Amino acid sequence: MSTIAELEEVQGPLHLAMGVFDGVHLGHQAVIGTAVEGARGSGGVAGVLTLEPHPIQILAPGQAPRRILVSLEHKERLLASLGVTVLLVLRFDETMARQSAEEFGEHLFSVAALRQMVAGEDWKFGRERRGTIDLLRRLGEPHGVEVTAVPA
Image (cartoon, rainbow, N blue to C red; front, side, top):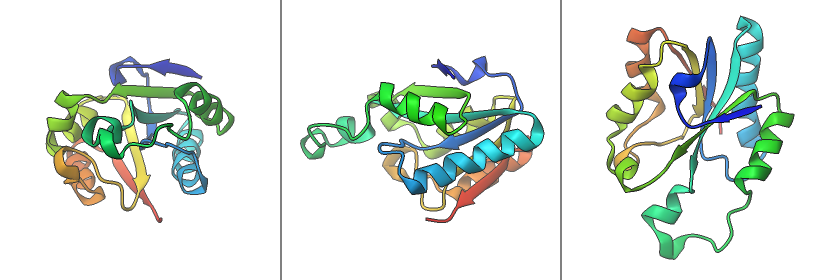
């Protein structure tokens, strides 16, 4: 598995699971597994997009746990064992925290190789967590990207 910092580095078709994946529990595994299966079906790349550090450490440091459940290194090993071939680690900082859901989504969909985006049905993203699966579907449709919601 390769770890990258820019989505543009991936050759497609890319099937991308979205989330922080702070524990890689069964729900996370279902999201990741959907992307892995999509990639196998298309002969594509199974990827995961995650954020580092965990957003709570920037948005509400006083509420952040002392220790995040899974370190990035441990997460890399877990994801590789699930069939992920590319891990995209985006740096979460104040600039990203201010980005609207639309800006974040449009940046992701601007990558020509993106074929499928997978997230939990209740996944939220963007400033004030205003982005939803429905917004991803609206943004992805003009780009021909399938957005798949995995039930919680």
